[in-house]
Amino acid sequence: MPELDDNLLARRAVEGDTDAFGVLANRYRDAIYSFALRMLGDSEEAFDAAQEILIRAYTGLETFDRRRQFRPWLFAIAANTCKDLLRRRRRHDRVRHDENVVDEPADDGASPAGVVAVVDLQRELTAALQHLSDAERTVVVLKHTQGFTYEEISSVMGMSVGTLKSHAHRGRRKLTELLAPAATESAQ
Amino acid sequence: MNCEQVQKRIDAYLDGETLEDESRQLRRHVQHCPECAARFGRLIEVGQSLSDLPDIAAPEGLVSGVLRELSARDTASPDGPLTDWGVRGAAWVLGATGAVATVGIVAAVVWILGLAPEWSGAIHAAGAALAGPGAACALWLVDIVVTVASACAQILAYGMLIDLALLAAALLALVAWRSKSQRGVGMVIL
Image (tube, rainbow over all chains, first blue to last red; front, side, top):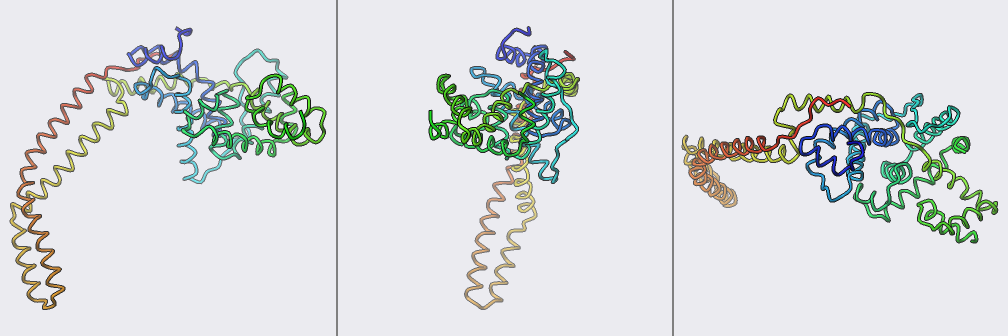
């Protein structure tokens, strides 16, 4: 079943195939968690958010139009969930970034030294991302770390491509000012 | 490619919207032009670093926790999870029924106790007591409103019967919908 495409798995899940949703959830768990962590800047909140995203995805599967792609639909849920959490956090006047969190990159066979460099860069970038506006951060993360096109992000966020580009350009320039040279050098 | 062209195309380059040949020319210019290197070198590095970031491994238990949660919901609701449509539909039907019932009951109480004529009499008395024509006109307007409300109350008293019919329809719709929705998540832990 792992080789089946997303939309077929989604259809099976709606029809009551319980294994199918598990396959989908496992397929996207790292991407969803990474997105949530970069949006929220806190590993504990990101974990809760990722669970909430998957639960919302399951309960909303009947509304998924299977003529469209599953991945942008899932990330629309992810973006809205993170937006809700950020709004709730602001209501409670909490600004959080866990400086001590060390998250391992998903296993891609990298050397230990390479893993350390990537973890440092993850931390620096995640911290810097928290200084962007919600819209800038969402676009930058979806575009650069998840590889979405602007057209796909437009369907996720309900904004025009022109507006999204403005957010991305502004966000990148802010990151450039925020990031210490060492952060990007460590990736070289 | 010159400095002006680099400035115009740098965002398109970072957005991945330049062709390979143009990208190569842009990179070459930035490498050899100190001014552009100072202005755009870091921007290119940051864009590249973001794009190179791998996904972070989700902590253990994320998916199994989700499936356990969904399974627990299924146990609590054996006919399957309520969809947004189901929750909203049931809420609308029950809410509308409740609103009509409230209006009907209030109207019936007003009608049965015959309060409207007494209010009307009191308003007439107050109008007579107050000699001012403006006050009298205003009170006559209030009287008209109360009279109309009284007439409506007689009609709406029958609303109690309608309420019962609506409530039965809402419950039947809810039962029918839930029996149709059989989807659920079992105890699958991957």
